[in-house]
Image (cartoon, rainbow over all chains, first blue to last red):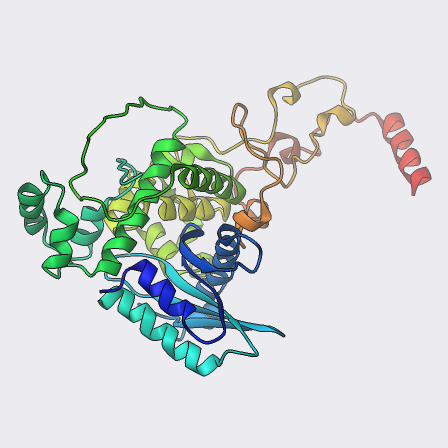
Length: 127
Length: 279
């Protein structure tokens, strides 16, 4: 049964993965991280990821037409050399968690990585 | 650090019984039977009441949540180390104390960046009248729910327990709502930007009435230490604009710019000339 460490290891096993973090976006806390942080330390990256997540979650444009309980599934940022996949994690109890994967654009495959990250996020909660 | 508890932060039991995952009676029975041996976490997973991932997420979330309220409490409290103490949950995940300390400090800065009004965190809060208008509804489902349950008697901690949410998350949302002028605490004055020395009523008029920065940006209440400029990384997207959008009563200097009884025209003219000369 996977815990946080296994989930992050699984994310790092995705081809092209540069870092993986589990972030609580109610506070900006990194509950766990593996790999190289884009900004040198995972704590800073988690706080900045939180800003992006909150902007999306609290915007009418991205949420108003969606289902009340899980309006957003993921956020993808495409940059010149990398992708950032931010996957929302759904728990039975109230939590505000995302799984953030930093992916190398040359060696990674966005579609495969997105599919794999979804499975990891579900396995973390469902076992 | 293996566990932390605070009356201001809902614990793992509150989260799990609040969302209906485990009935309160079943939790009490489990705690009674397996708590004394510190095996509750193990039993929850073995009986498939929780997955390992859920247990770790819930445990770490509530640990950091409670630790913030214990360690950031300005009243301090009493500290004691008990050797050989065992927590009823058992060991789920251990947190390095230095990391916990950094996190508590970061969260404190984050709250002050949103709206530097620490009294709000423990005060009964209520929505202000115009927040009921559709055009003033705040963004985000969680903040709207908070506003709907704030009744002037419940504190942020009460709201967190009622809604089964993290105490820090509710505290931050309450400060965001207050910064947006949608919620206030009737028994606590809003932070004032006017130091006592610049109180109105000083005779003579002139420029000394003006308090630098008093018009838009709020500064922390006297006696409360806060960084002069909020950390942009920690402050969040809403932080830089939030205090300026407040509907709080303006500061004294800003509220009465036209009530100076005898403006010193000669002085004002000199100041204007000097400013123009510098441009």
